[in-house]
Image (cartoon, rainbow, N blue to C red; front, side, top):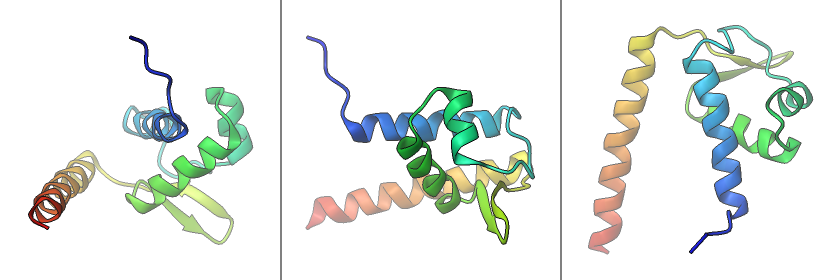
Amino acid sequence: MTRTPRASDERSGAYEVLKQAILDGELLPGTHLVELGLAERFELGRTKIRDALTGLEHDGLAERRPRGLFVRDRNPEQLLDIYDTRGVLEALAGRFAAER
C-alpha cells in the first residue's frame, strides 16, 4: 500500500534537504539563505522552504542578521552536540507525554 505524503512530510523533507546541504558543506557558513533562490536550487516550493528555514533557525543551524537569514558558523562538534541534546530532550518529552 502506497502512502500519500502529507504536507507536514513534505515540509520536513525540505528541512532535511537544507539541513543535509549545510552538514555536507554545500551551504557554507555565512551563506545568505534566500527563500526564492533555495526554492529554485532545490526544486521545492517557497512555503516549504520558508518552513524549513524557520526550523533551521530554531535548531541553531541558521541565524537571523539585519540583512536576512544566514548559515550559522559552527564546527562539527557543536553540530553533534546540538543534535545529541535535542535527541535527549525529545526522548524526555516523549516519556513525559506518555506518563500523562
